[in-house]
Image (tube, rainbow, N blue to C red):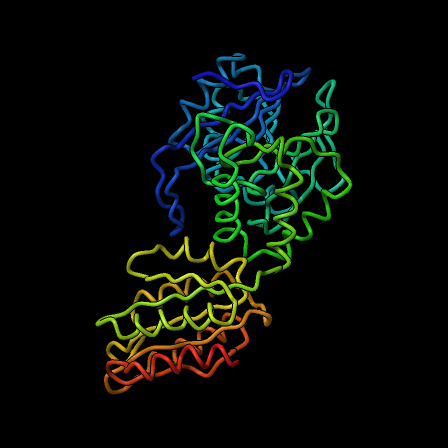
Length: 388
């Protein structure tokens, strides 16, 4: 396992998780990586580590450059175990190394993870001289843990961003100009939607904290390193964290005997007639993490469910629970519920209530059709949307 030089004497020494397919309920169909970086200077510095199960690969890559025993400093930008889990294995090789972590939460909590080691706390404005280079520390609390921070090297114009700007994307290539741009930006969007949407305000604060830095490379904690499209990923983060949405719709549903499905298709037709692009998703066929990604930049959301045992379908409940947990809370998002039913029809009001709990404005009264919808009832759906 060989290290990859990203600038003179600065190496990617991370690991690639080709087979990761689920991360906290988020489907990672393209795998991921756990990125760590080795800086060779007067004080040899390792920035982040990797998931514990990949410790041998991490140490192999480090060993392709130097004896790990020579490491002087370890920067822990974030305690979550996919980034910090190999700290004990590295410390076995360099027991006198100092571990730098964010104050107060990193310093307070890291002993609970890894016991009694040589920890140092850093705060906003602190810097660490490692020889020809300096490392500056930028706490970004709740992006997405209380201890999260960025580390910036002004001499190299590199931002070591940990979970910021990352993607779950496994690749033997390391840089943004080496991979397909649309795939890369989609995975960055998916990562933001599923991991960081809840922390939009904190993401906006983090962007402001980096605004005056000259950044030529963003060395992420997951996925691909940004060097060509730095401005583009910053621009997209600005759009995503400020809920700058497009005049587009997403229609999400589950159906038992195709009646709610028929309604969903005529809802899409109504949006199309109104000149609003709409995308249709059956929850039996699409993963909720993919739907949240599509939702991120769309103004309208319609969610449909038939009634099952006096409740909405479990797939719909799961989607709304997942979406609500990401706390979009944007009154400018326009939503409505729909569905067919046999007798009680409780599900449609339940869906509407959850959409309100997500923080959306209800755009249309919920649409309820008993049993199999007639052609006239379906046409009325499209007309209602068209005339709204």
